[in-house]
Length: 101
Image (cartoon, rainbow, N blue to C red; front, side, top):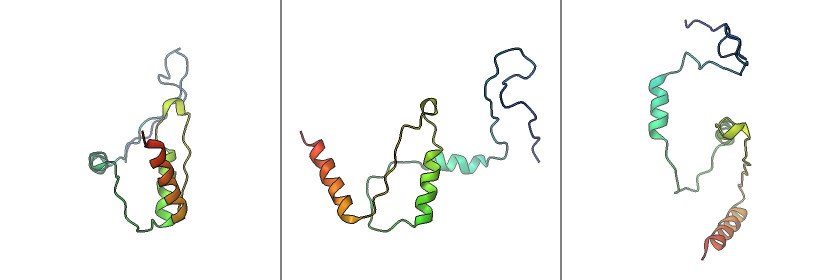
């Protein structure tokens, strides 16, 4: 079992007199091979099917997306889940109209 850190999470160096900063040690039980597989297989997908995404999978994806790193932890995003086919088509039409020269 990995040794648990007893270090103060607000200090990078508990014995120094430096300004205390937030510090959270990386988890020690990461499966490096699985992490490598995830990173190496990451890609953008631009072809989609009509197959519905199960609600629990969609919820998990949104929860994980909220954990993504961002500048100064500003979290400058908004997610919209559009499941109505006519609304999806309207969004596609708007996007195409915007991108026309």
